[in-house]
Image (cartoon, rainbow, N blue to C red; front, side):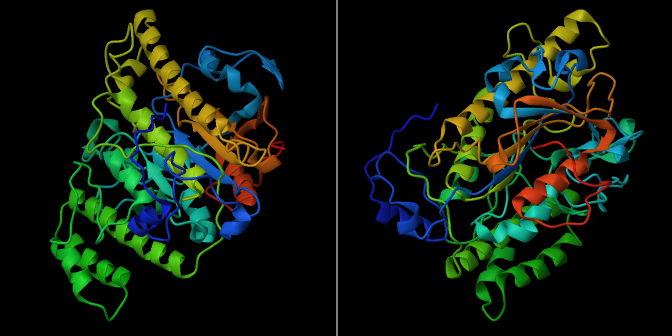
Length: 467
């Protein structure tokens, strides 16, 4: 729940502190919002699209219900979403054929949003075989908001090669979003830094690292960018990054990619300020304190805070495209904070059908689904002129495995929440043909976002029956 603790501050002061290119959150200490048309905004809310990843599969018989169409039963895993049953479509029979016969976890994560064939590499030459759907959308419509996309997660980068797991680089499992087959888009895991991406500008480019440190203007790469003004900062940084990449470690390269991404975002904000797009301005209040530095002590607090920030990103129209990782591949998060659970998510997913272990695994999944329900309810509670933020969104939630114990790839556990501004018909179960490409769904979502593509991954067309 959002708890306001703000001191009185004028809107003028905040604009001066954040820059005109950024949206403002609607704080208690600010007056009522001006009408959208008076602020040069959009005449109706925009459509948002998000992909929320749950690792380590599910128990199939606790996910897939009996019944059909609108008359299906609520299974144990779907119980937390029961109050939202009329707000999502339960999708069935979708899969990524390029993940079959591969490792149970690592290559499945980047393929989830791209349908690509992920190559085994030493970690120096990553190749996912595709660009993810969020980045495809960003190329076409990302310039309409200060942030083209917004990537959040909870776990730091994992490195090394999993020799026991097929020889795949573990970092494949740390990134959901890929700008191209070789370039991951780093997720932010520190709440304050994620919040600052939405509402604050710094003196110079900064970047959140996996160990929570930050580069500042004393960093040599940053200095070379600031001292030269005869060309684009973006071009200069690219030149410097390539030089350092040739001598740096794999971890250094990932960190430099994060740095480069931060500079790219700064330039895009500058361009947006010079050529501002019309924005959607919500008339309401959703106060939230700037998070304290670091990562919260508990996993539950961390996840909820990041979900609240994700809501703000859409509510303020700072971005319309996002991804969220509730956990990385083989997530080692210890869920002993749940009653009756002792151990990590991934370890308990391999329950071997032993009742005591399987029961703990089920409790972890149910808890994570409940967190998704919290997020969707937050979206549903926010009015946007007669419709809700959830009505004006398309939120896919699910994962890359149907049976977490057996690593099965067919009939992935997926829901599609929201009404897509009236283009989706939720409240039912939608059974596609057996082994329908998941990328067919992405083709249909991109159509609704106003993006035109001929194909994605292994797509064979559009997914029928969504509206």
